[in-house]
Length: 620
Image (cartoon, rainbow, N blue to C red; front, side, top):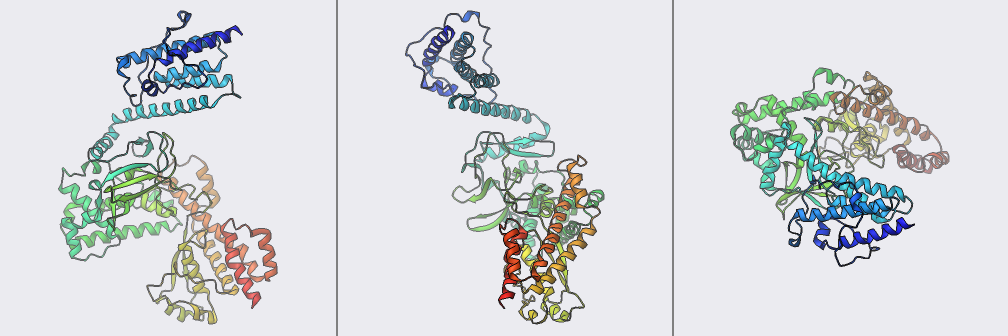
């Protein structure tokens, strides 16, 4: 009616008011003028009738980065803000004339956004959307998305301001300043504090795919070569030390030596942000936490890690006795686990090495990966690049690789609650000891082929084609082979022979039946070693008994994952064994009815192993 006509006239006045803002100011305020408005070229005063409107508050300073300065003809940012206030008054006048016209709210939202009053702008855009939910144009949707993004950016800026004054974040600010002064670049990123001990890296602004989001120059990297060139490292090299983790030891030695001998070390800002303790690492757990791992091979792995670190420490002391004055065994353990959880394997000028990379080692783990890293020789820097679009405010992750939870827990101090890829590939494994039966008539021959060892300890997952699984399936076939089949077995006294690269293929239906019976028996035996059942662990994790990321919860997640693998292998054996005794036509019918899609590990094993064996027997 008449109100709509008056509102249209007011909108025209508003358009003429907008025309006074130069292109630069329009960009700075992010005003959007849609094509439907007939923009005039002469200035108009604020439309009559605005005297009855409520006073417009003064512009609020934005919490994000300041916009570009307005052009000189407006004199100052104050003058620009005054023009934006006039635009807001005109928009409010439109709303007063016809509260049901969506475009009035669109104009109000842009004026408020230009003034930095982001939450009010969002409310204005939402009000306009509510008035015309079915016919809202793309401009309104785009404006809502833009203001929502600006609100997040403003909140991040305020969060960073608060964090800079937090006592436990001051060292991180020193680290950032140190890196930036030396040419490092990560403008889209910031460190977010979750707790006094837990942090992550987040996007300060939207990140597009294939964006280089981090650059850390070589001078900030601590490399294996620096460890070798240290006074202790040179003695280790001359003594030809025999270490279980050579690269990690050289990195550990350098850091400990540099921390103790150089109080004003170049790397002091980095050392100061390293955790004082690694209580999340299983080698530092107390007995109560370790007891939660009863039944798991992880307890043996922890003992092996403890023993290996102690042996490495003693071997270093053999080469350089003065290292005892630099670091105790406990300090060396700390350094080894610090290196294990933070180092990157990189290639610098065609030479492979390991390195500690400040700031880059702050990214937490997630699969599938959304970033990639490398050392770029042209930039002489370690760089990280995005592999997908990343929204403002979201955490930015690195991928630590496809690993079993036992490796994540032992080396990093965490577990992945659902350690599967989107396609369902489960990366968890269990350890099995496959022993040659002393009652086997071919025991002596097998013992000789296995270099005198009575058995094998191997890792196995839900995928029989995984590298570690292929080795364990090969062990099972080696042990279960009978008669002339033994003549086909490889000579494992040849240490260059790798069963994961050149596995023992399925031999016959009868041998594979023995393999599956042994596999099932081993899995059932393993399950009896745990004090809890799989169902009990699932119930525990569904409750709030243990806090997120706590040692207790990590222990339960680990053992639940192992039990899932064991139950899966038992089910595989139960489903596959009957098929190995049937004729091919019957097996073919079962496969077509039940396993044709090959969408899980059992289906793939039956199609790739059982079917070939039964078909081959029938053909013979």
